[in-house]
Image 1 (cartoon, helix red, strand yellow):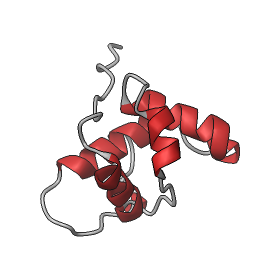
Image 2 (image 1 turned 60 degrees about the vertical axis):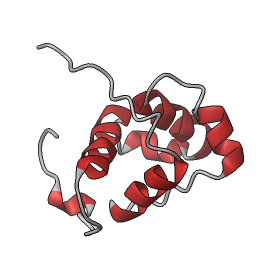
Image 3 (image 1 turned 90 degrees about the horizontal axis):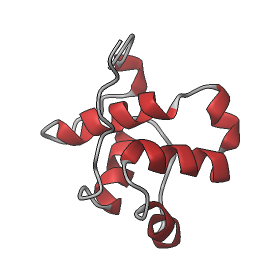
Length: 93
């Protein structure tokens, strides 16, 4: 099975990512200090993996960084401001 290329959302900005996290029911809020570390990473999947390892390791047993990155990227690509919630996602994103 071919894996899709990593999602690149470096240009989304911290505020857009924080809004997407909130809309999805994820209580990740990347402050400027956290963002300064994460923005150096290559893509959203790497950023989320690093964030989880360093700030919320208990979530690694529940969520795969690839899944969360795709969920967030999908939310960023959606027009409007409606809340989708993680319950709207089942199966592969």
